[in-house]
Image (cartoon, rainbow, N blue to C red; front, top):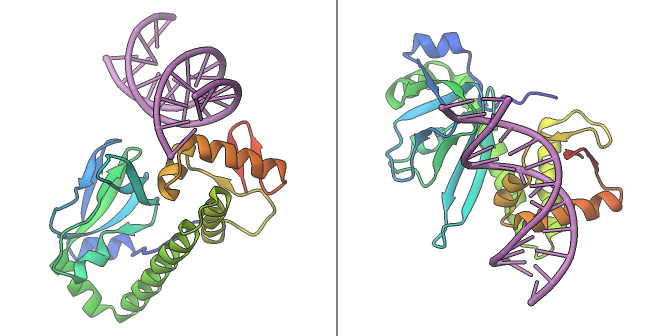
Length: 204
DNA sequence: ACATTAATGTGGT
DNA sequence: ACCACATTAATGT
């Protein structure tokens, strides 16, 4: 699997500017909705999800991030508080850099600014795709929106060999669908030859 | 190794 | 979409 690195700054550089190692257990919160944005975070090991809950208590997953990906940085350019939680899905090791140090790092490394813009573009693109496919009432179209994006983002180009490493529950919470609907829609897609399911693993 | 929890799959409303 | 339940997989102690 092609590893994406958005945003991935050399750890040595992060340490020079005051980056600190942090480790978390599965289910720990890195930050919560409403917290002030104070740090740039970059994942060294593990996976996190960014979520929030609607008024009925249903979880909505905004994004799932893995190794060499960063999070929290868009908020560093605003004087705003987080609008979602970031929760560990596995044990996680990450490097965090305070806002001020992060700004200093960017000032002294113009190239990083450019990479950051590319990263932001990627994130906005994801949101656009999701918004567009979520406007459909058809669950299969919603799933396709997510799957096409994930495949273009993570996978090498190949036919039905991209392993979607998300649970059906996670997919449901990313697309605003029910688990049962996701399960049934995936099976339907398998019948139509649009993907393969190999003992519960989704190959797209 | 066993108990508990989470994920998956099905059928019915 | 929602609910209830059976089966299976993953996790905790």
